[in-house]
Length: 386
Image 1 (spheres, one colour):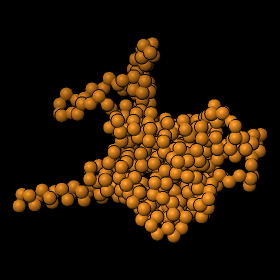
Image 2 (cartoon, helix red, strand yellow):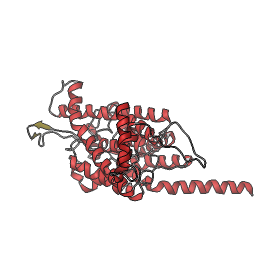
Image 3 (cartoon, helix red, strand yellow):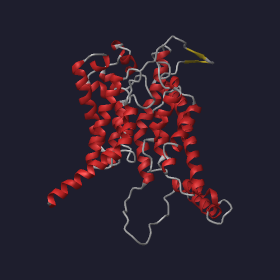
Image 4 (cartoon, one colour):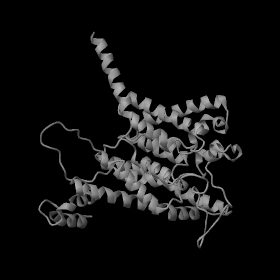
């Protein structure tokens, strides 16, 4: 590592002001600060908050919290593939290796396309590259079906970086979650690759052959929307997550492991997480009381472990940039996400997974929630003075 540090120090003059590669300084700085602790210091004047954790460490911890979902997703991709082929006795290693071959290219394309867009904008705007995309680059493939084409992942990632973040000013300025913007872009631009019962499981037989009309890989929510109650896995099976769905969203256990790290380190908001689950539970309980269709008949607890509800509550709704900022606002924000997610599931059978739309909608409403919370606090204090 000392030799690498020495090499970077020797190359730095070429990228600094007046050097031959001055325009590429943001790219050089990003690589250097990713490998080593930056030597930047705060200004000599003014008040500053000094903390042991910076943006890079925060992002790395969030990425680490996503590792259980990534690893389980790899295994589940292989498990669902072999299950579709009727191979019931495959080992954990076989499942994991097949899943890794399918999932890792999606991760690499996501990071490659997104970081390229980030580098280009940093060079044009002459500012340093922020570490915010470290998380988005991992989230995007985890919310995708396994058989989504790589070029679609690249296009949706670039769209999320450019339209979802850079046009608003870059990291820390986006009004909606970039990873969900990528998923929403694909859902509305290429719906055949993001819905139906043929995209969630890889049914390739090898050598270009595929199981055609021989296996249905519908998600549990897809079966529920179609009224096929007998094909909905039980609560425990849904909690474990060995079911069809997006790569990283199926296992509630894996999501909770990630939540434990986020809450222990203080990065994730327990107010948002808990209120999302409470809102979803109460909304499902109300619908369960009427029970007019299959989705309404699903128990509240079962709703919370189906689809991407847990993944969205833990990793998407808690985005510190696009979520509500006030403590009271976080409770309201999370509660409405959970409520709307279940409501979208029940009232929109064409799109039973409503977590994405619920979070994006509340991302837009978060500033309004904070505004009224602050106004209420001001009015309360004014009354005390009077």
